[in-house]
Image (tube, rainbow, N blue to C red):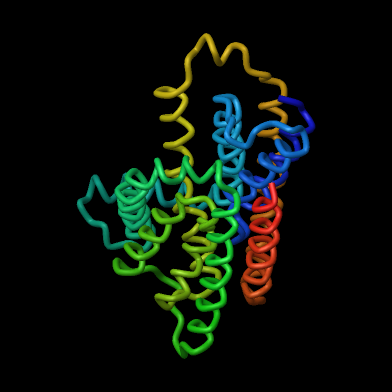
Length: 280
């Protein structure tokens, strides 16, 4: 795998993982555009490409852990103390429990959809259609949020369940994980910054689990030795750096501005992708 391709995909992953525009869709588009350019059949996907996707997600995991390091430390500390005292009434311990609950719900929904998600990798035009749907979800979430007079800065059980469901559905490329989880937070009455913060924190266990489990059960050691590790590592570094910068500025953006611009982006890119790949 060329280093230039991995750098490009690292930048794409870093930008699109935390922006509500579907990182999985953009990785599918980038990979398949490259294959069309190189006259490689879209139906072909090596294990190295799959592993690169996992490593790029690991890069964005590093980014979110660094940016929210204080939150992660406080939540873990609160959970440990609550387990000792049997008292989970503090805000941080409750948030930790909600993240665990949301993660469990995500896994329950995502596992049955995994085969469908893997199949969609070879059908970028369908992924484009799902990206268009994400755009409309963002529009609708903004519409409902503006109509709400009261917005919450703390999560409750119902909201954590709903956001976990949204994250589970977002295993399908084109359904933006951050987009669907933030939109669901807005649907259920969370304020903008709280919805975004919970969305990013909820991504940590899922990305960590996928990064650890997939290589153990899917990758052959002898085959992995043949990978272009320089390319994979460089792509992962770019993913982490771009991801960190993206979180930093997106948190400032979402506290002041609407998600509608991302809704329009999803619709335009989705339509353009459907047209392009339908002609191939």
